[in-house]
Length: 162
Image 1 (cartoon, rainbow, N blue to C red):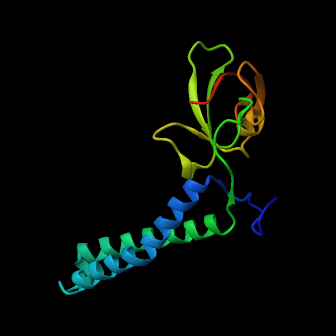
Image 2: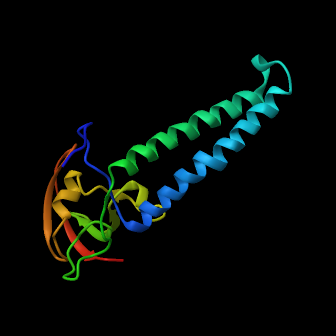
């Protein structure tokens, strides 16, 4: 199901939803006050055309307001889902999955879910992306094919879960 913009709603775990709500609250209260104070302090230094502190504060304000709009849009249509591997060991939202690409020896771990739920530096695979769609519902030992920008790829699911 898509929203009015045609985008899939974000699928977030309850923990991530709460964390993002707290971040939004912090940015719209404390964050805005701090930026306003920084801009006011920089203005007091004089000529704004050559005032690096003023321009830096205004740049920070723009980035913060952009993040606020991003969070508001994300949370407005978010769908709350439970995380982790299903009881039967299948790949689902919030699962860490270890994959081996066909013809390669090495394996790589991926987190299946929203970029907002990223685990450290682990690559994230959206459940709505071609690889994510191919993985959902599969189990260890399954081989899946998916269409990537460079052509059709095959991966083996080595392990489901961390």
